[in-house]
Length: 398
Image 1: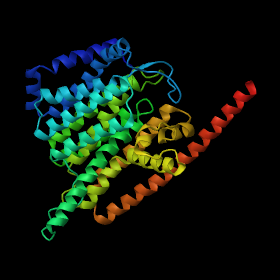
Image 2: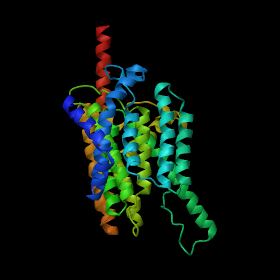
Image 3: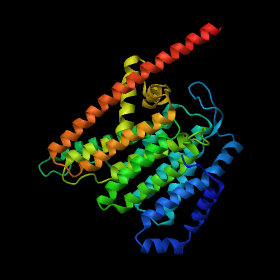
Image 4: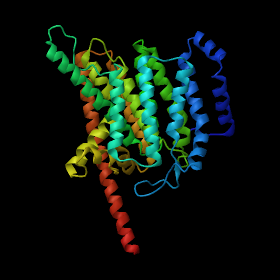
């Protein structure tokens, strides 16, 4: 929503150059400001890279053209995700923030980026995209990044149960990574929503990371947050349409990164209920939307296979229904971000609660979802009435 001016852009370009200087980075490190350096560098680098990506998109005709459910007014560049990826990657590399797990993650993210970029240029069938997502999840799992929901180190467990619980954790990790990738991709249907959720969730996980003495993970979160915020001035514009979209390149990268940092985050050492509930709160809106539309589409017979589920494009998502209810795409996006922020704050507070207090917050969350569902269905009814009126007007004219 920042109004971009030439002077602001030149300032970002200048800061991008300054922050690459080893002397500047070393001084910031000594001041204990590495987090600020990474966040600022990611932000200004994202801003700096967007205009070249817009030019490249037009040059090579990598554009999202209006048709059917895509109601933007003109062909729009699709390379925003490439700039966002570079804005996360370069600050991390220049700050020597590399571990074996992170190298595997970045390698998998690069592979996902290339396939998604090809998909933005020439749409791929659902199955190859799913296989690539599963391969990325497998790479992360093999590096040792696994959900630890089921206990595998209890001394009284027989080896067969330890193996079974470990296998269950691996399956949950696959489901989580593929699910969050597609949940963010599904929600990237309005200007500012995908990147806004990326910035918000990265911030929340980053807060928890620094509280738990996980600075490396916190720096990754800050890098993602800065890159998403740097993208938003070109995508979420108050009086104009977006100048560039994330594309599948950006939405899948954001989803993959968010899924990764959530698994790596140390939500709680001694309270398993917090480790279970807190991530569900932070990712409340994406999980809710994906679950809701999946159930509704299966119940209505709209989708019957995983391929249909991945490729189905409908206007039944939470942002479409809130648009019908609130009368504006911008209001819908801001309202959804506010909802997720409220849930995320509860997740941060949850870490200092007792079991009873945690259960109360969980019931509050469930009540929250009931209210959202009621509002959603009210918006859906308004949307259907609007479509019927529009259809009636067309018939009268003809």
